[in-house]
Each structure stands twice: as C-alpha cells, then as structure tokens.
Length: 229
Image 1 (cartoon, rainbow, N blue to C red):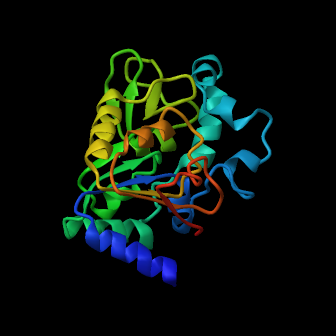
Image 2: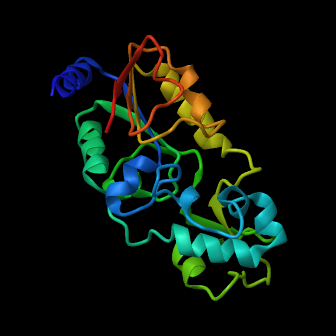
C-alpha cells in the first residue's frame, strides 16, 4: 500500500509522463506474454519462437510462419483491460503525453489513447511485399494458409520480426517523447529485447518507475522505483 501511495504521489507531481509497455500489460486481456513460466517462449514448438518470428522464417518457410503467427497472435477479439483504461484516464487528465509499446496487439489504441508509438509494429496493418497494397488483419487471419495479394505475392504483417529494424517514425518519436518526460513508467516489460529496451536510456527526468513481475536490468538504477506486479 505504501508503494501505491508513493506511486500516486509521483504521478500527481509529474506533468509529462511517458509510459513504456511490454507484453505483461496485456495478459489480463487474455494474451500470453513471452518469457514468464506460461509465456509463448515456453510453449512446445518444433522450432524456437525466435526463429518462427524471424525474417528468415517468413521468407524461407512462409507456410510455417503463418501457421505459427495465426495460432499465437490473433488477438482481434481481445479487449483493453484495467491497465489500458487507466492509462487512457491519465492521458485524458493531461498527465500522459505518450505511450511507447512493444506490443503488436493494438490495445492501447483500442482503449482510446491518442499518442501511441508501436515500436514493434501492429497486427492491424499488413501489406503486399511486392506492390505494397494494404490489407486489414481480418484478411490475414481468415486467409487459408499463406495470405496472398491480388498480384499473387505474400501479404506481410507490419510487425517487426527478428532480423528487422524498428519502424523509424515510431522509434524516433518514442525517443523524443522519453527525452522530454519528467516521469517514465515501464510496465510489463522484461527490458531484454533490444533495441527497443535501450530507448529508456534516453530518459533524463525525475522518476523512473518499473512495474513488472520479474527483475529487469534496470532495477538497480539509483533512480528506479520498482513495483512487483
């Protein structure tokens, strides 16, 4: 309770809060995280999850990629949970200026947050690898086997796969937001996936708050205020 009161005091005092979220934020919406004991990386699979979600797998074995992707990342029916809704309230009060998320589930946008930087992309945008025609998520998840464009080429989800760079606009926008923040709340992220996790090194503000089930590399920071969820 004391930590909750202290966290509220920090929020009340701050005027430019930025939130950085990972998969742990969406578990209450019924989605799996990656590294917990019940996470996606612990799920039995013929190949490591890192390979199944890699650029190499997408282009070399697209049938395997889409089988895995459709089975594990179809979150079209997922709804924002209490955490997403709380961040929306803080944005409405003028406290939160931006949300930077590693999640591809679109739940911050569904909750109504306006300034969201999706540094690992989103399932809701998809494009043909040849002609760049855009397709919605329903088309991809409801397609049989490999989703194909009218031109005959593969439709690729706009999610960042292993071996790919982060989307420049969201990455630079997120870095700028962090650099201006007086409070940074990190929620539901192990902070082990780079370069996204390294973005928080740009924070020069007063309060760095980490809310996560497991330890992170930043827990020992002299500026950190750690809450185990």
